[in-house]
Length: 153
Image (tube, rainbow, N blue to C red; front, side, top):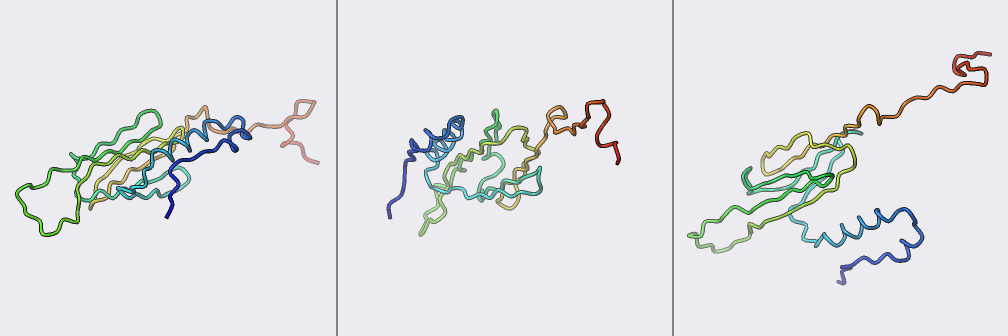
């Protein structure tokens, strides 16, 4: 099976003036994903303003995990706990390995909390738009200065 390992979008980027950042993000994300899929994760929408990122981190304790938010990049890193070197394995199918997952968050998305339960790291995200940036209803007036919505007949 042939796998695409680079993404070349010259034809698309020429026709999309003003969307340079979007294509740069797609290119960067495509280059950063090495298709290892470790650890697996889900992103669930709880409602219009809340999401939950769930990452399967079985074998990692709280001391082995690190979550940082820098600007709009959420980074989750795990350092594999040291194994028992004295054990002689007949079969070792559970490999401890370090990982690093990054998620680009939209504006006004904040990390509400993070919990570790039964091998699942759950990161709760909320949208918190400041009052001055929220949509406002604008009344429409006619030439005489009266509000159209109040005029009847």
